[in-house]
Length: 389
Image 1: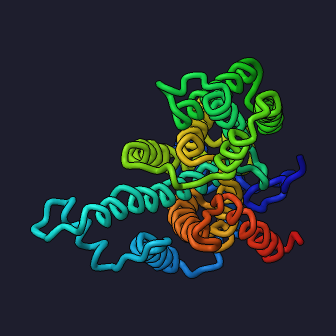
Image 2: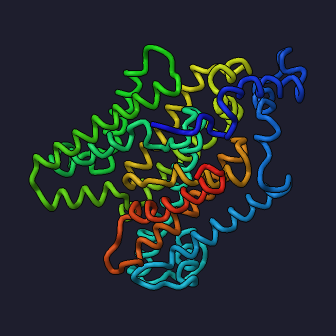
Image 3: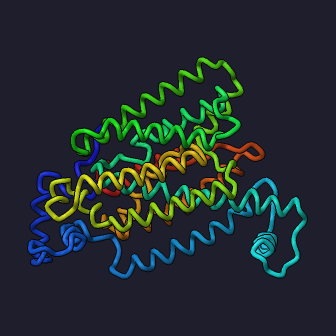
C-alpha cells in the first residue's frame, strides 16, 4: 500500500529535525518540561501550519459549516417520495417537543418523526464519525490513503450481518444491527490480539488491518456462496453498500452518544495526533506516551466505526476525502481539522443520502453508491490541488 510519507505534507526524512527545531525556536521552554500539548503544536513548522485561509477565516468557516448543517438537516427532512412542507416539519417537531401546537394526521406525523428525522440525523452523525475517524487514522498511520475501514472493522461487521441474515444465527435476539456490531467487535478483537506483541508502528497496524479485512471478506463471501439464496444475497448486498433507511430513534441515540464521546476523546488528543503526523519517534520526543495513546486512539476510532457500520452499513469515501479537503483549507492542525471534518462530513452525507432517496425514485439507491461516484472525482481534485496528480 503506497501513500504519501507524511499525512501533513512534511518530508519524512526531515520531519523529526524540523519538528524539534520548531520547538527550540517557538517554545524554548519545551525542552525544560513544557506541556506536551504545547510542544507538539509548536512542532508543526510554520509552513505546515499555514492554511489557505486568513487567521480569522477558520472561525467564519466553522459558522458557515454549522449553518449549512442546520439548513441541510431541515431541507433533507422534506426530500422524499412524499412531499412535506417546512410547516409540517415544524409542527411535528413542536408537537413531539411538548409545544402547544396542533398535531398532524398520524400517518404524516409518523412519516416525518419516526422515519425521516432519525434518518437525517443518522446521516449527519455517521458522516461526522467517519470523517473524524479518517482524519485520525491518517495521522496515526501516516498514510494518506487511510480511512475508517483500514482496520477491517467493516469486513467484520459484514460477516456478522451475513451470519444473521443468511444463516439466521441470533436473528431473534440480535437482528442485523446487533449481528453487525458483534462481527465488528470480533474483528477488532482479532486485530488487537495480533497487535498485542511488538510495537504499534504504522506499517504493522496497516498490514494487520489488511489481513483481518481479507479474512472476514473471505468468510462473508463463503457464507453468501454457500447459501445459494438469491433474495438473501440481494438484501445483504444492499446493506453492504450502506443505507440510512434502517435508522430509528434508538440506534440514532446510540450513534449520537458514541460519536460525541469519540469526537471529544480524539479532539483532546489533537496535539498527540499532530505529533504522530511526524512519526512515533518525534511524538515520543515531544512528551507523548506513544504506545498508550495509540491504543486509546485505535480503540476509539474502531468503536466509532463499528457503531456507524452496524447502524447503516459500510459507506465508503467519506472518511477518505473529507479530511483531505478540510486539511487543504485549514491546514493539518487537528484541533481545527477534527471538528471541521465532522461538520463537513455531516453535510456531505446528509445531501448524499437525500440524493440517494430521489435520484431513481421510487426505487432507493444505496447511499454508498453515490458517495463513491462523488468521492472519486473529489479525491482526484484534492490530489490535483495538492500537486500530487
